[in-house]
Image 1: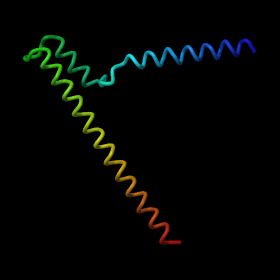
Image 2: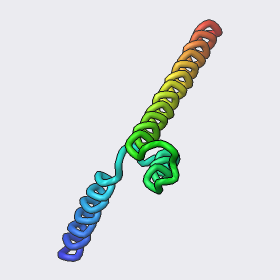
Image 3: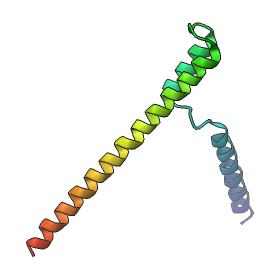
Image 4: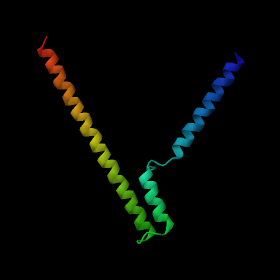
Length: 93
């Protein structure tokens, strides 16, 4: 029984550590943003670093916005298809 308690404690500590690690990862950690940010920080960009970073963040926000719109369109289309299927099923009964 004591081994079970040790296992439970270990699992709990592991879960807490994983959650803490996940919390330290920025929300904007997508690969394209990270690549753009690294380019800005390298000093190779023709514009000032702060402007480059703002543009990278704006591009990332645009990608997120477009992605949310795409997901919403797919969900709406699926909902419409499901509704049409339900109506066909009801009419054949």
